Length: 110
Image 1 (cartoon, one colour):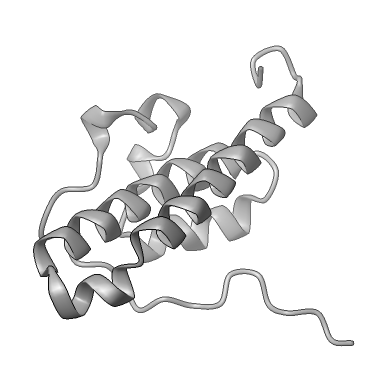
Image 2 (cartoon, rainbow, N blue to C red):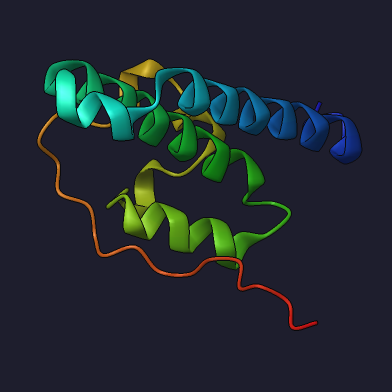
């Protein structure tokens, strides 16, 4: 869709992916798993981080600075940020450190 410059349609799909990630975190409740199953908690958090990585790659054409901050936080090198890198081959590696999270989209004042 992006190659066809169907920006609106492509962004809708990315929004759907974000919504699915929200459902996933609600269903799996890693904050509860922390008390009962650390292995599962780590798997859930990894899945979410990988989803965030892919979303950040796909939103770069629309919000390049914000997407860049997300990818910087995940320690994704500058040469692994193209659409071709939004695949399992370039997935986050276990044990990779991430940077201190920062505010990406600040709240708007009332």
